[in-house]
Length: 440
Ligand SMILES: Cc1cc2nc3c(=O)[nH]c(=O)nc-3n(C[C@H](O)[C@H](O)[C@H](O)COP(=O)(O)OP(=O)(O)OC[C@H]3O[C@@H](n4cnc5c(N)ncnc54)[C@H](O)[C@@H]3O)c2cc1C
Image (cartoon, rainbow, N blue to C red; front, side):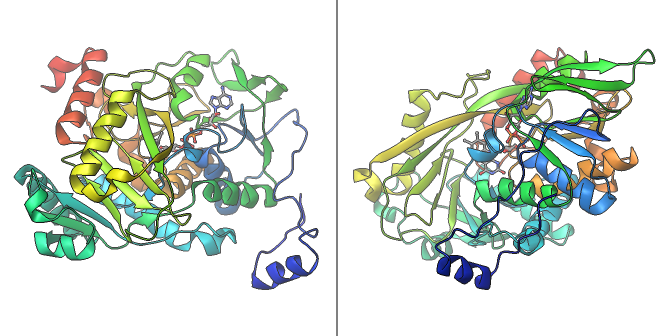
């Protein structure tokens, strides 16, 4: 184990005095052992948080996290880092609210500066359909005791003075909604903080190790994993492989009801402070925040026509997103885009995540995290509970795979994408699964 190194103002001052030559490695690069109690495939936020909570909450530290590239090199390191819990259904509200609460304590818990800025998220609403949708969310959230408020058009403009003046609006702003406790965090820091915490508790993080084959014994139970860095004996394999979950589950002969879509994001050149909230406009399919570096971090809607694992974006999505952005903020017209990137988002058929045992004893799945950065703490904690006890935590009971057999779907959409796009994506998925007649 690495010796613990607490980060504090005093260690920072000490580091400065020693020209920063005193810092120990935040986590080890240990050799692969021949057997582990649990092997987690995927060193993104979900895999590492699961390892951390297995060790911290359940005392299970003979755990390996197998990552084919570098930790955080998947979607956990390429997202726009928005954290909120304003979902539609009680199941989702409870789950994502647990995650938000864990985020509120996470910096202290991990002793790592995760740069969580609860600057609030304001939804700018341009249609009555969006107002109705958000009001419905607000009422459902009130039932669950989570604050989410509606705003008048004037209140929206007071919170976001840079918005287009009334006279320049094609679609006038009708109102808004706000979750005051929403915000953004530094995505790498979440990955690194969990990695450091898991490593301190004895978890082995094995990078550059591709999971190649899953072995089962004569009873069909999990027996081991073949990786590009050697074989491991284990009775429990938990997959947290992001958009590769369906492919990795295929190594065990399991088909999962998942499909991946492309999502892009963009960063502008740095500018002076102009936005102190996260802005989201579901009607235009655009959201943005102002980063500490001064760049605007801009996200668009999922590309419903790109059902693939590609991580390159298409130009029409950039154009659509920029058109929406300029409609809200005409003054950004001169702004130059510095970078563009994208990732493959994984959707379950009903848009809700899967945290579940499977028909293979010892094989567990955490998948369908299309908006799953905000879910990392609760996802990891609930997955660790399931793996340790072989029973789901009460919050994750609805997220079992068997809901697709019993038709207990949990249809859930984002706040960012226009509602008709979510409907389109879900209907694509249902068609793909041949189950349209069942859900109509
Ligand atoms: C552009 C964009 C913007 C986003 N914005 C937000 C946002 O604002 N808020 C939000 O909540 N969510 C957002 N998301 C979604 C969020 O990024 C993901 O839901 C989340 O990061 C998923 O984490 P994960 O740990 O499941 O997956 P990942 O971080 O992708 O980790 C999976 C890991 O598994 C590894 N792996 C795969 N196959 C194998 C194998 N065979 N062997 C070993 N390792 C393997 C991969 O290399 C990867 O590192 C966004 C996503 C994108 C693409």
